[in-house]
Length: 416
Image (cartoon, rainbow, N blue to C red; front, side):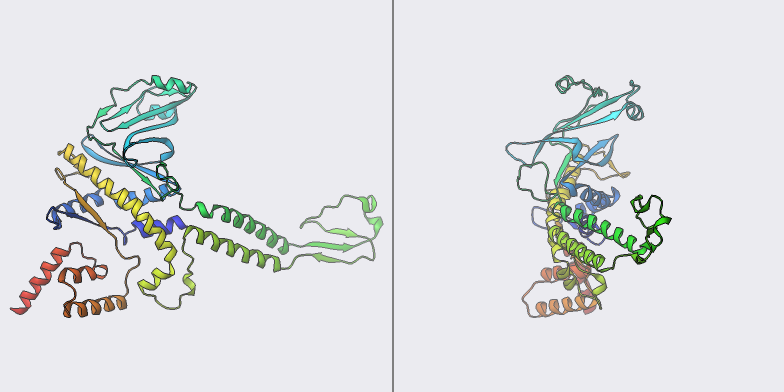
């Protein structure tokens, strides 16, 4: 639940960041920005980044970007099958990645590797700064030392010459060891508490089912019992217990106080785990009226703090790196097609992300922002550029410079 809530605030439809690219004169490059924005949606990059954030919540995720048959292809990789090697001088730079996992003979045949005897095989592939190396599958029963004798598959191996490994390695959250290949798991802090909560809830359900079908106790003569009172008695909800004459008859049942206490304890464990994971502990049924965007942000303060850290991991270190890798591939292969279109060589040096507000502003919020901006602009304490940027959360404009031009044109037209 915490992963789904955090990812929805990270890469959902209303939280996709605006991509800004500046020229050397610090002006916005609107043409390149429009191309990059179209490439992102043609490649369905928002959905891919959302899936990568969910998959990488356990610690890390990798995104493979490569050109296959003159077409750009993006693939998400689970890091449990990857072995990365980082540069000693720059721990953030990949120099080599080995992909290796076990497949069966039928899987190799479906993948086009040909017929192999029945059994399991190691699939191995290396990604370097200059080439992608495929190896012939080897049987699993081979010892680890025999992996040194991997046979290169020349037919599938290719030279890309990018100068970088075509993989973007994303660490989920900052870990204790900055040089570790994996980051911190999003939900690690709440696992123990939720295990206790699940066990407690299962026992509570068991007690409620027992109280719904109590055991009946009857009073009968002793001679009516076979073998006297020493007979084996079945004591469950579907059998009655027979007692000698004169004994009391009752229903063995439990009250609901234990179940209520267990549910209160479960709520406490749930709140504790959500607090440890920085999840959303606000209840929507307790809100009696529409809240402003700022009020919603304060209600979900822990969740916004978590998503703010994820924005650095999957935005600054993830999405920007993917866009830079795409532009590098287009520079190496200018005739490359992206979703059926050719964009030529893309130059994306100074690229940055502008994230939207955590929650959509209400009409009252927009009126408050407009009044504040108008007051600041009329008193001369802010420029036109700053005023437009202050109104950006409410107007969702893409380019500030183009918006200023439109405002000046409208003013000239109204004066005429």
